[in-house]
Length: 316
Image (cartoon, rainbow, N blue to C red; front, side, top):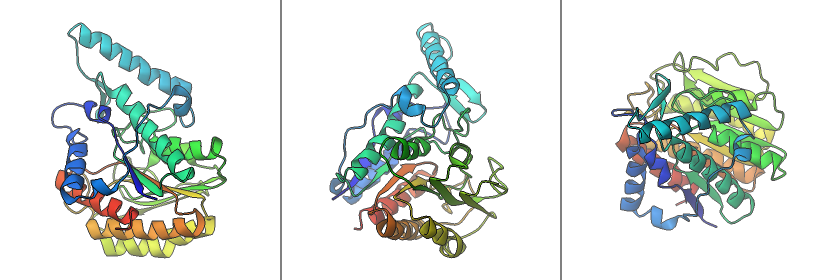
């Protein structure tokens, strides 16, 4: 079985204004690099459906979904009338007239990848989608995120596909506060990861939920220290949980070249993390992994890091 690569052109149409770091060019950089290296030709590229409202409700309240949809309808009407082309949910997070469709494709990719891996049509999968998701809370969009793609996919695996235990590994430089908000205290879920602290969104260091082990690390932490934290604390916790499927919030903004963080990871660290997660998945989850793009804003570093991550998933 091959590794799947899920993406959709509509994910490129969402943009949050000139100069915003979470830009359509992120996906272009990834695809161009995978094409240039020949890796993309080795991957399956299935169709990506839109998520339904019922899919979004797996992780979000109807009120939150309706609020985002209402903003989309307002944007479309104002754009037709020559009005503003963006609506800012917070200083960092905006929508344009295409954001709703992009968000539905991003969540739809995560669900479709989950189904393909559970059904045995793919060994594992990477979703190159945007907007990202791990800051989106049950009731709130924030931090470049509208809906929580990973949490939706994890809930889909549990509620609809009959899995009993799933794990989320988050190695973005920022704490996945939205994923924690949605999955905390659900004994069927385990979330582990590292994040720079103190740093946006200034949370995660004191979680009371027993199914969360998200560990803060200081700025300028390098790959050797991150590997040690995973080896000594996080991977043993994952092994003990014995997940039937692993989801990865794959943020690459902890790379040493990324100006939105101050950590020191490089491509070899992302490859190592992926290889170790894959070994745990083989022991407990029939190798089943779905990974979704989160952060990563230096385009060259992002492209190289995704290449290392996907190559390790594909065991090439």
